Structure formats: C-alpha cells, structure tokens
Length: 442
Image: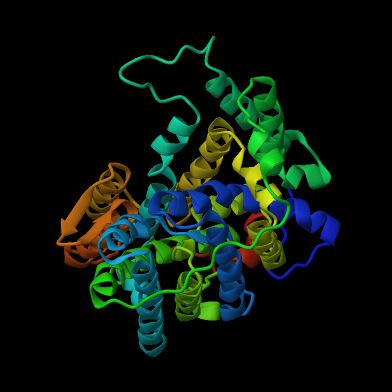
C-alpha cells in the first residue's frame, strides 16, 4: 500500500517539488481560463492563485491541504459588470465578494458547526461529492476529444487528440499502479509530461510563443473601483461559491480522514477563502475558490502535505513573473489535460461513493433514495436557476435543494437511513481499523 504523507509532514525539497508541480499542472488550465474568458490577465490570475493559497494556509493554521484558483462561479457576473461598469468596477465587486465570505465566517464562528450534521447528513454529502466529480465529466471527455461534434462519431484511427488523451491517461494509470518510490506518488506529473512528449510527436504543440516570450515581465496590475451596481451584481455570487467551498472541504475531510470543519474550523476555512478572493481582486485577478482538481491529485497520490501545496503556490507566483515558463505551460495541449481530468474527476466521484458505503446509507429507505436521486440529477444534469442577475447552477444548486429536501422530508424514527456512521471516521474506529488508520495518515 502506498505510504500516506500526512498534512503536517515536511518532505525533502527535491521530493516536494515534483509533487508540487502536479498540483500546479492540475490547476493551471482552469485558473488561466477564467481570466481569458473575462478579459482579465492570466499572469495576475496565477499571482492571485499563489498568494491566495498562502493566505488560506495562514488562516487555517497550516492544517487544511487546499489549493485555491480562479473561480468559475464569477465568470458571467464579471463579464456583465465589465461591460456595463468597467473592468475596475468588476474588480471592486470581487473585493466585496470576499467580504461576504468574511461575514459568513463570522456568523459561523458565533453559531458553531453543529448545524452541519443536521443540514448535511452523509447521504447528502456523499451525493454532492459524486456530483462534484461527475458534473465536469462531460468537460473532461470533451477535452480528451471523445465527445462527438455535430453528430459525427469519433474516428479512433485518425484522431490525434484521442490518442494523445488516452496515452496521457494510460501513463498516469501505469505510474500509479506499477511504479515504486517517488514515481509512484507523482502519477499526474508523469502522465502530463508523457502526454506532452507524445503530443509533440503528433504535431499538437506549437513552441513559437515560448521562443518569442520574454524571460521576465511584470504583469499589468490593475486597482479596483467600487461601484454599487457592480457590487450588487457580483457580491451575492459569493453565496454560491461558499456552498461549493463547503462541498470541497467535506470531500477533503473524507479523503484525508479528518474533520476540518472542527479543527481548524469551517469559519477559518471560509475566512481564508474570502481573504484570498479580496486579495486577488485588489491587484487585478479574478476571485478565488478551492479546487476540485487538486483534491483529486491528493486522492490519487495520498500526499496531503500542506508544504506540498505551499510550494505549488510559490511556483504559481514565480510563473506569474517568468513569462517564458508560464507560456510554456500554456502550450500543454487540451487533450493532455483532458486525459488527466478523466482520472482526477473520476477519483473525486469515487470518493463520494466510498463515503456512502462507509456511512452505511440504506437506499432501501425511500427518504435516502429521494435525496440521492434528486441531488445527482440536478447536479450532473447541469440545472440552472436565475433570479434577476443572480444565477445558481450545478453543484451549488444541487446542494441547496438537497439541504431543503433533507429538512422537509420525514425522518424515520429509528434513523434507518444512516446507521450511526459519520462521514469522517472517529479516532476509535481508526484505532481498531489498520487500513483506515493508514488511510487517515495516523
């Protein structure tokens, strides 16, 4: 069994850097896509991602392994606010969104986290975790070149994209299943490097931008301007991303085998995300959020060290100033990222299934069947609701509907649906179960 690297464990630098590169590659595509779509600067997004992750680590006392990158929830509001009120006003809205996080963190600090067990029982949490992994399944398949276009089937014999994606996936799977030592804990990095080399042989990589780029360049910093209409448009979206944040934290709980909502606390986690969001917007980057891609890396490698996450953040900061390296990573072909994404997103979904199994959720109980069914269909189906300028869709919408149904559906007297097994294993259970003890890194 692969050794678990615990949250506070510090590895030698030469071992840490390859592990950190995995996280950098996993988050890179999504993090720079947000500024590209919203008209912001990708280098500032990388800088905000790295500094935001450092801020989060400090706020959570170095106890939660989470990487923060550009949030997709804010894409449409930023585009609309930029169009009508200007880009600087949109940045002001991002700063205000961070303040919403901080207000919610203050409320949770006062009210405590006992409400989580009532609002988010294992059947809801497990189903939401599955949604987090599978909601992006279509995106991963599309990036891998496996999604038919205009009704045309994919020709396996002639599709360079498919071969590249499958080669990347195969390389990561082989590294994870058969390699030993350090190579066994960097399967994502091995898959991406192998896929990149294969893509070069297929003519899918254009190195011209790398050759033309400067070695060092300061990104074009931009200061926010506070406009009430833009703030009212963007700040409420923080409620959606907070829901996403809680979902990601619960997934991390399950993978690592600790309850981070209690230590260091959900309030500190949300506060860290809020400070990171405001900080990124202060100098021209998009709002931040925790990243499922990096959770997937941890689930595959069983490396939970905050030091590894911290070095990934440091590399992101360096890349924001070293233009040539940043451009080089941008040349990674989409099929390579698609092949890796198939593994990452699937691993997260599998963690949700494991949560349901370990919590002994009884699906012969109608209540549990309804909760799981509705959450899965709403979340994976990509349902979306809009009220004025406020929009909620996918996982956050599925979570909110699941919470509401959980509160209004009648609960069996014997609580047959969940047989007293918590989403996070207790210390006593871990002590009696050597496999679980190893998996929890204790």
